[in-house]
Image 1 (spheres, rainbow, N blue to C red):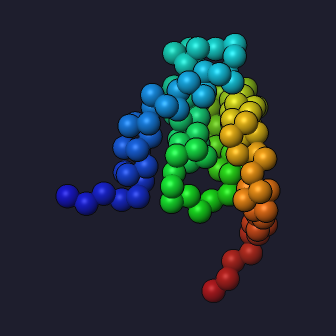
Image 2 (cartoon, one colour):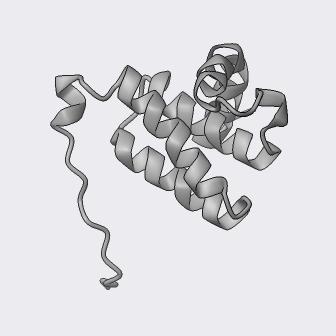
Length: 116
């Protein structure tokens, strides 16, 4: 049986849930992990895993946060994007924000131009 990279990430997130959930709980101060909407919690778990535990990560942290916010806009409730941005922003600031490696990361702008 072979797994796609998404399958590995899904399994890894599941295995690290015990490490990830305390970070989410710490910064989702008004809510317990059990009270967070399931879609929001899934987005937060995946993004927190990518930020903190993905050793093969090639995506800059701020892009991970932006992608999580975009998922929240598509799949979550009206307040989901702001909530997810706030929680992940605090996790990023505490764990990654001041490292020299992360301060040097640059994000290439995304264009809508199509090339053939």
